[in-house]
Amino acid sequence: TPDDACWKLAEYERHFNVIQAGIRGLASVWLLAAFGAIATLLKRPEADKLWVPAEWVIGAVSAMGAGGLALLWVVDQLVYHRLLNAVFIVGLKLAHDEPARPPLHASMYASSPKVGFAQLLSLFYLLPIAVLGAIAVAAGIHAVDKNPSSWSWAIFALAAVPIGLAVAIFLKGGRERRFFRKQAGYFGDREFEQLFGETAGAGTFETLMARHGEATRRA
Image (tube, rainbow, N blue to C red; front, side, top):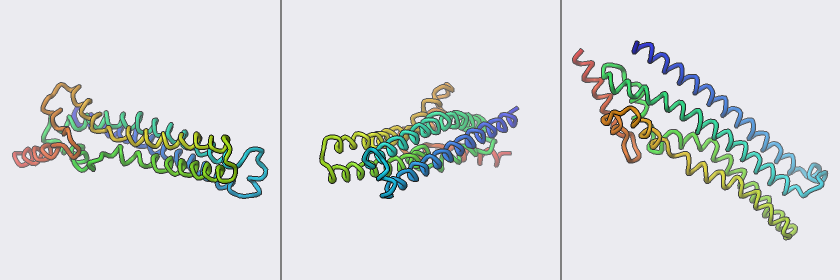
């Protein structure tokens, strides 16, 4: 029944939200571990115990920390967030086909910021990765200042890892609207597909809420 379908959609949405929350919790732990390792290396007694310059280890930890966060971003945003959106758009289609149904999904979509939720969620990963990149660059500058050899300059290759990952996430994180338009086309309903605006913004989902108000008044 339609009501059973709504409950199923809600269960799927909650399931994917819980998984994404768990992934972000893991990302927070990973980031704290990376910062903790860097803070330990900044202590002179600990740095003196190393058989390689501390700047190299700091650069390596920054690169590995950024790589781990980027992998978690892939699982979070490119896997589970897309699965969540795939369920969400079914709720939008139900609201489109049945105006009497409360347009919960349409209201949420219409209230989304112009950049989209995916772009905002990507900042959770992008900003820490950028900070790790800045730390790696600072380590490279310090190493070159102490000993301007080719090995010291090579630390900037490690710094390029988090910087490149931050740029990739920034470029990839803002394609949520394109995903919705593509998914809408699979329903074969031109009117529904046209609800998703070409440009940034809420599209025309306010019309679904207006249709619900009309259907409620007629009832």
